[in-house]
Each structure stands twice: as C-alpha cells, then as structure tokens.
Image (cartoon, rainbow, N blue to C red):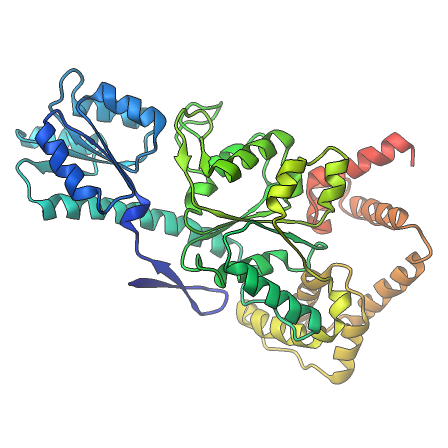
Length: 463
C-alpha cells in the first residue's frame, strides 16, 4: 500500500511506501528466559535483526556493537532497573523507540515511564497481537519521520527540475538509454559535466528508473557544508561528540536507507572524509561521529562533479581508490551548446513549469526568438537558460539584447587563453559582489572553497 504526497512543483504526487519490518532491528531486555524466547520467536521471522539480553549490562555491550531501532525493556531487571536505564538512554541522546513491559505497575509508574521517553507501556501477560501492534506503531512513526525528512528536503530543492531529462537530440537519447540500463544495477555511478548541465536531474532520473524508485532520493551538495560538519551530515553523530552536539542526530545515509544518496560536487569533500566515505562504500556499514556502534547501510551512491576527477587525483586532492570506487559507471552529461536543437523544447518546458510556479501568464514564443536563443552558446548551460526564462517572465519580455552583448563578449574572449577568460570573469563577479566571496561563488555556481583556491593560485603565480 502506498501513501501519495502532492509535489508542489508539478502537481503530481510522490509515492511514499509503507515501512518494511525487515528494515528494523529490535533488542529485547528481560530477565525471564521464557519471555525472551517468546519475543524472539515472534519477531525474528519479521524483523531484520533481533537480539536479547537478560540485564542492562549485557544490553549495553550489544548496543556498543550493533544499532537497534527499538528496545523492548522489562522494568524489573536485576541490577539497574529498566526505568532508570531508560532515563539514562534519553539523557545520552538515544532516539530509538522504547517499549516498557512489566507485570506490576500503578498509574504513577506508567506516567513516569511515558515522561521518561517510553514509546509505550504494556502489562504482562500480553497477547502476541498486542505487542506486535505496539511495535508496528513504533516502526510506522519512525518510518514517517524518515519520509517527512526526505520530503522536506525535496520541497526545499524545488528549483531543481525533477520532471526528467528534456530534449530529443541524439546525445540526449543516448544519455537516457545509458541511464535506463545502468539504473537496473546496484553499481555506483559518477556523473561528470559542466555546471548547470543537469547532473542532479540525471541522478533523479536514474533513481526513478531503478528498483529503488519507491525509496528515498537524498541529495547533498558537498561544497555547501562546512568541512568540520560534513562527516556529521553524512554519518550522523551522538550527543557530546563535539562542541555543540547537544543531541544525537541521524545522518543522510540513515535517511537514504534503501534508496539513493546523491553526492553533488563530490570533489569538494576533504581528504579525511573521502577516506570515511570509501570505508562505508566498501563495508556497507558506518559509525556515527563519537559512537562505538557500527550501523549497516543499504544505499546506492550516485556522485557528480563538474571537475576532472582524474586530474584532481593527479594533483593529490582526491583519493585514487575512492575515484575508482565511484567511477564504476562514468557518465558524461553533454553541455547545452552540443545539443542546441533541444533549446526550443527546453524553452517551452521551462515556460510551462515556471508560469505555474510564479503564477504568471506565459510569454509568446516566435520562431525568430527561438532561433536566436538556439544560436546563443549558453555557458551556464540548462541552468542559465532556466534563469533566463524566469527573468523574462518577471520582466514581461525577453531581454535578448543582453544575450547578444554577452555573446559578443564571448566571441572576443575566444582569442584569449581559457585561464585568462576564467580569471577575468571571476574577478568581475567579485567586483560586482563588493568582494563578498560567498555571494560571488553562489552567482558563479561554484563552491567558496573552489573560488578561494583559484584566487590563491593567482596570488602564488603573481598573475
């Protein structure tokens, strides 16, 4: 059974699958061997991992090695009581569900348990269907929290066209064919291409055509996260792992479980985090920052870069072993200038999409205008074309004169070395932004780290 959530960008719906029991793990903590055996028999055919322990000490040792989504915890345990341990778990940042069970309880105990962070409170003896319903409710809440996180991320990125790859040119037909074939495999994919060519669109298309289509697609721009936070963003962290870590937090690998994690601008990952990523890809397990526990992960990685990763490897800025691990399938997204015949279709596509988003009437499209747009080289690729259509709708007309002026500048620049053209363009943007490197990097469509590296290179050479 599927839930369907409306998607604001297109008016279509996104299918959100119900949870899978097999995706969850349970730890039973009870001093009665018969109860442990009863719960293990009931849960092992359903859940991905079921372990049991007779007391808190044994349970803590299991939790140091394994990740559990749910604890079924008896209150009256030898040594430390289940209720006391529940309070400690919550103080230490454990975010999983906890079902408390007991043979003797009064109203005060139940209230104390729920205030302490218990997800449910069940009296012994109980029926199998009673405990299974309680567990199912916990799993469904966790599943919905995960899906809501993914949907919020998708809604935050509505500027990205998720309708699919637009264009009937031969290179786009070839690209769709390659993506369709690769989608059916579990292999990692590396998408290469200039900024603005639509690498994330290709990644989403690959996900939609894959067996993981009904699971989450979680994107991350590696250049947009500070170097000291990227590890926590990817793998999560436990409470107290670093200054400011006041609570435990799941990473994006957790939210992408069963689906696809898209790592855009993967070349911007610092070398230490490249090493951590490589280990996760090879072992299919991760360890949150500050934790001793390893968590199994089932995630397909699709990475993207607008830089030559082989050159980055040669320069010592990217690990060779990670490059080979990511580039199992390497796919190049063509620039817009190599598929100019697709421009009229793209113009109409963005016109239809943006008039809905902006609530504006469409502009008239003549053959002469489409021919003029098709003759422009679009150095910013599809992203620049989309921005041009959006700006035209806001202005109420197409500022084609501005395109002509920019085209003249490009023609004049052909006589210059590429490095000089790049330098002049960056310096002009820095000047336009009053020296604000973050804003200049945003307008240029690169990371601040990339911009600072370019400026440092010019400073070292005296250029």
